[in-house]
Image 1 (cartoon, rainbow, N blue to C red):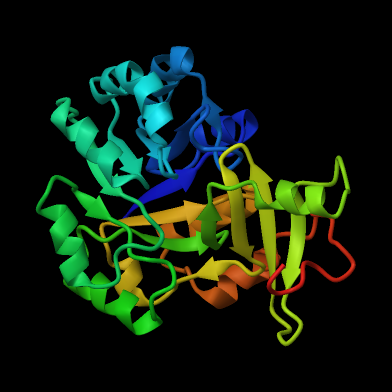
Image 2: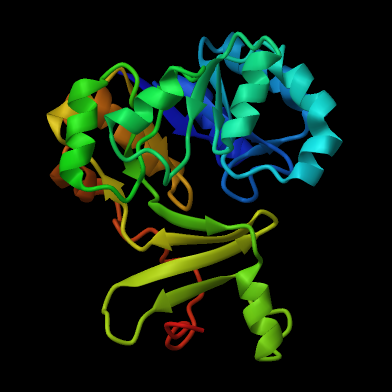
Amino acid sequence: MKLFVEVNSNDSLQVLLESNASILVIGLKGFSGDRLYSVDFDDLESIIETIHHHHKQVCLLFPYIVLQTQFQEYSSRFTKIANMNIDFIACGDVGLGYFMRLNQTNAKLIYMNETMIANPFDAQAFLETGYDLITPAMDITYDKKLSLAQKMPSQALFQLCGTHLISTSKRPLLSAYYDVIETPNAPKHVKLREHNREQSYFGIEDDQGFHVFHEQLLVLDHPHFLQCDYGYLSSLFVPIEETLHWIHLIKTNEFTLENVAKSTTLSVYRGLEETDKGLEAGT
């Protein structure tokens, strides 16, 4: 299995260059918020060359929808990116992926949208129109994920372990809330909990909008997922040492929830400041 592993800082980049990760996932500044190590456009080719020098492949991830105004401003740079020596380009915006393909990219294209692909028919529609790999929706049932892994082991890319993103909104919801309650300069992260549920979530705002994460790590350790050609590790908020251990477990065929739990604090948000009771449902 080839492992996609997110890079979250320059320090983690240096560590992962010496790891058993197969493909390092980076972002482009202005398009990935705080989710990834974001590279300036002018430095992108140099970073790609460095990663290739360490005998690893590069995935440039655009995780969010690209606004029309952004596209108009950056279309010439997108055209140049399409002709760079990048191994994979992953897009949460379907149109950006098609743009890359039309501009002669040699990279393998990944449709990496957390909500769109719920079954093999959805997946096939994207595969037939230019994409090489797809990521199934995060919130489909476990059985449906298993079915996709069995039917498309070479084309379905599953997140095997790491931070569990639930949803993203382009709107700065947390800033808007703080404006309403007249609380300036408040933290850009908050613990969310509905009155009638014990389950907690975390909301984080950056320059790409407002993102909601599950408070527990996602771990998919069924053999069907591990027999796919590719796997993905999300290391956001996770110490790099723990990510390295996940890589080791997968490479040594010892990747199980039990083994992950031995070395990982499954609640990965312990460092974030919480409100007293979170935002109430409906606010």
